[in-house]
Image (cartoon, rainbow, N blue to C red):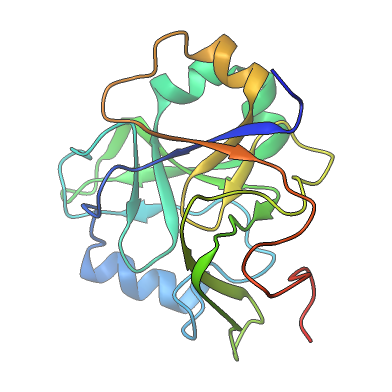
Length: 200
């Protein structure tokens, strides 16, 4: 398999976890940007307090309105400890009674990458924190490829991007209800925007 092929591991559908009111207030006062509803730049691991007793939607889901992936420990263990601790920030997930959910964690990448598209593409930068906010339809791809210095990357869609070799080793049979999208690296973006690495 080509080194320029990656896989995006993501939630299926739009069902997500919801933050408790107290958890939302705590996030807003500490790590959440009020301009784009994503973690502020420089924030590493985050803890969340969700209304569900456990995530129900598959091995990867997310917290609606807070830009944070929630991932099962079983899925992360398949990727390997070296991959996890070299490339990801891991946080805790608490249920509605305040108890920690032992089988789940929040997962943020030390590197965030944007999956590009080809149709109905839009982008802007958050006025508060400067984060790139991007939306596009069509087959997703990477342009450019992921930055060096990591074995797995966080996607802007609350998922994880892994090299083809890591994916094939970790998941001979992909877990049920795991969204998987094959990503190729292309030289020229198909959305007409050029380089989105820096704010113009």
